[in-house]
Structures are given as C-alpha cells and as structure tokens.
Length: 113
Length: 114
Image (cartoon, rainbow over all chains, first blue to last red):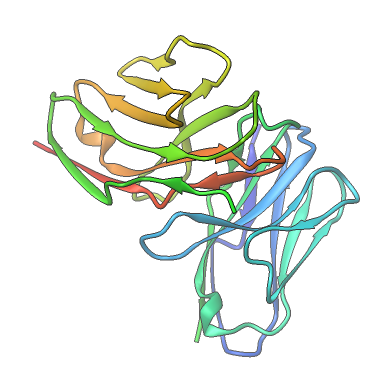
C-alpha cells in the first residue's frame, strides 16, 4: 500500500517550458488536491477534484491546469513555467467528506530559472 | 476567505519539557474536524492529531493533545515530554465553509533543544 505517490521528486525548468506533475493514490479515495508550499509558508490550494470527472479551482489556480485522469490519478500541468511558480508541490487525497483526513504525497520540488 | 492563524512563527523547547502551539480558525461549518500536521525536514506532511468539533472531549494521541475551545474557535496543540524528533514545522488546518477543502495556517517552526 503506497498511499499517495508523486513524480518527479525534483525538477528544474527554464522560463516558458511546460511540464506535468503526476499524482496517484491507491486508497480508493474520491477527492484529490494539489497544493503549493512556498518557503516558510503554509500550503495553498491550487486545484482540487471532489470526484472522478470533476475539477475546481482553489486559492491560486492561475498558470496551472489539472486533469483527473481516473479515480487514482490527478495531474497538474504548467503550460508556460514562470519563476514565480518555483515552489514545492504536494498532492493529497481523502476519502470523501470534510471530516476525513487528507493524506499527502512526498512533494515535488520545482525550480523555474 | 477562510483564515487559519498560527500566531507563533517559531518556538523552542527543551527536551522532555512541554510546549503548546496555538491556532485559531473561522469556519462556519457545524460538523467538522480540525487537524494538526507535522512537517519534518524530509518535507513529508504527517498527520499528528485530529479533533471532532462536535465532541467536547479533547483529542489525545500519546504525547500529543489538543485544547479545543469551540466558541473561541481555538485549537491548540500540546506536546508533552518533547523529543528531538519533534523538531519540525507544525500546521493546523480547518475546513472552509463549504466543507470541500482545507485551509492551512502559516505554520510554527518548533525546535526541540537537547
């Protein structure tokens, strides 16, 4: 039981390049989330998916797109990376409701030069 | 917008002593859970403890306990018998008004000194 997995663990991009961060969970959870964490700060929600086939914007969605490929997988895409998107990205999942615990992946450290 | 406030950016405690980290929130949900997460240098977000808002009894998990004051919307974390491995960032989180996402506080960096 791997929980929540993320790939890659580290990535360096040049301004304007694109990339996709992958996330998968094997806990049969319905809801999945993408957060970013800037140095010395808390997590801010980028996008979430309450169930397969649905996605919604969070607090800081600009510059990102997401795809809920199936129940297990939720990807985050940067179409044209900017230095302001340098951050650590976390994927999380939870079973259903607001009373359920969110479980986090190990994070992806992204640097945009 | 929801806000979760952790008023102590940094704290330190001697090994084996007790420390309390504070958190206030402002959700208008009636039935909700509150969460404390630990983030050690490895970056992994680890659930420490969670509190059910409709329960008056404070949650405890071994050396970790909460002081939950629902009317004041306060949710502090007490760590007893602090250990060097408790050194980490600690984040509290509460649900937004729709209950479909969590809002995190800015974190408290805790240093346990030998």
